[in-house]
Amino acid sequence: MNSICCLLDACTVINLIHIDDNDFLLKKIKKLDVYINDSVFTEIRNNVYVKPWRELGSNHIDKAKREEIKKEIEQKLTFYRGKKNNNQDLLDDLGDDYFDRIKSLTNYTKRKNGELYSTGQALFLSRNNFKNVSFYTDDYPAKNDFADFFHDQQIGQIRDSVDFSVDFIILLYWLDENFTDDQLKNKLNELYSQYATEVVLLKKKLQKFRSEKIDAQFLKSKKEIALKLNELIRQLDIYEFNEIMEYYNFFVGKKSKCNDILNILQEYFSVFELDNNQKEDSLLIKIKKVSADIGKVKILKLNDLIN
Image (cartoon, rainbow, N blue to C red; front, side, top):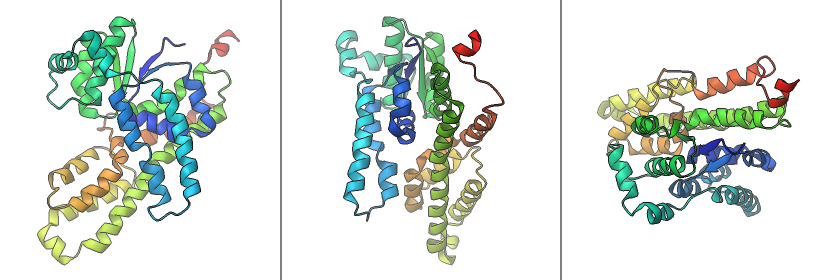
């Protein structure tokens, strides 16, 4: 089954690491042809500890627990490290200007980043290894920037990594005859918990800021900011994520007036990745629906076809 070629982004790998007890998923991922761009792996390294360290708290004195968590994560990172490429190898083979040419061909106007490097790697894999590549990214603008290139060059597909977290687990399920319905439901529940917990924590942080910082003077000088903050808290309270990224972008635009709020939003940026632009169900709703359908809608494996 290594013909299923997946190019993963940081968000997907970090989610898999955090919900993967006893390397359950790791053992099943070995059935896939997995690639990670080395610039993306750097992003993984820089962010994989953010959530566990935050949960422990800055004043946590249990060094043994911290070391235990670090050891577990490092063991998982060893596997994913083995899946990363070396961009310099591509430059050696294809020329020092390879990624500059990809940037030009895709009309990409931003600085070179993990999405651009991954797009260049995907093109190479499709041509050199004859792979149909599925690349998953949580960068919505980047997805739009590169979607036509993936289509025109027949590289494969570029999709949202947030939705992919669900689809990837289901893929591992039907690849493995020993992956049970109960195990699938447990993994989906763990994934749901990852995001739902972030939503609750973000809401509490914003409510605390509102109660401690927003007074009559704040309302007088920054009324628009206070109103937007109230709207965002209401959306989080009802788990409504349609166009929620617009709130993040609003506070980015008002950074000079509300840097403290923006810092909170950046700490819980994964919540804003749940934005579904009103096109389809949000990830949390999708997880609930898929989980509820387990046992009702059969996801067929090979043995189901034979029997």
